[in-house]
Image (cartoon, rainbow, N blue to C red; front, top):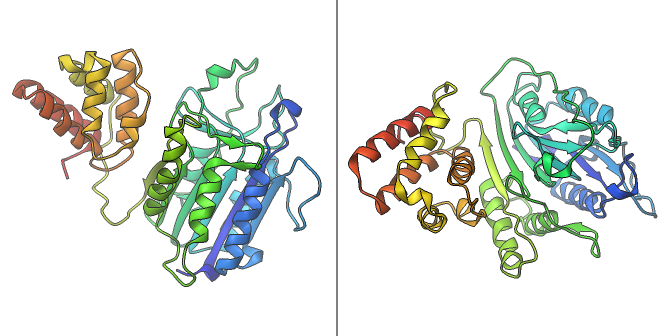
Length: 356
C-alpha cells in the first residue's frame, strides 16, 4: 500500500445554514492542514476530495467543494468508489451529536434549524465496508465532532433519518474509526487558535510520521499518541474528552466475531454484573474498571445509577476484542464468588463470543 494508491475525503465545516449560533472556528483550517500533510506524504492531489464551509476571510487559496449533504453523499457513493483506492482516509471536522439509537450524526453545511441535514456516520461506514467500494482497502476515519446526547440539545424538530445505500457485505475492507470523544462528551475546540483540540493533536502526530515510513500509519499507535497528548489538558480541567478507537474488519490480533445476539443478551449481561454487590457503589465500580487494561473506561465519569453506568461500561468495552473478558477478571479479583462468576462468564460469552 502506497500514498500513490490513496484517496481521501476531507471535510471541514465552520459555517452552517442554521445561522451564526452554529459557527465553529477551526474545522476548515484543520482540514486544510490535513490536506497539506497528505500532499507531503505523496497522495495525488486529484485523489483528495476537499469539502469546506469556511467562516471567515480570506478564502482558502486552494479549490474546494461545498460541504452540503448532497455533495458529501455524491463523494462517498460515486467519487470515492471511482478512485478504487487501496488506502482511504476520511477526515471530518464540525458539529455532531449522538442520537437516541447511539448513532453518530455529523451535521452538514446545509443543516438548518428546521432540517438538520447530517451524515449518519455508521451508515456511511457500512457503505464503504461493502462491495460498493471495489477491491480491498485499509481505511482510517478521523472524526473531530461532539458526541453529546441529542436530547440534551432540546431540538424542536427530530433529526432526518436518511441512511446511505450499501453493496453486498464483504471481508475485503479494514476500517479504523478514531473519534475525538467518547459517548455523551464534547469535542473541545480552541476558538483563539481556530483549531479542534483533537485535530491539532492528531495533525502534530502525523507531522512526525517519517517520510517513506509504514503506510498508512498505525491507527492504534495514533490513538494512543492522541490520548497521551490530551492527558495534560484533562488533568488541568481544560477538557474531559477521551479519544475512542473502533476497529472493523479483519486485522492482526482480531478475534472471531461474536455470535449473532438476541435482544436479551445485553440485558442479561447487565443483570449478571448487578448481581455483584460491589456494582451498587460508584467507588467500587471505579475500582473495578481501574483494573481493566484499557484506560478509556476508567476515565469515563461514573453515572450515579448502577445500571446506566454498567450499560455505558459494557458498550465501550464491547467495541474491542477481549475487553469484556477482561471485565470478568476484574470483577473476580474483587469478588471471588464462583456462582456469580459462572453466570457472568455465560452472559459475556453470549455477547462477546468465546474467550480468546
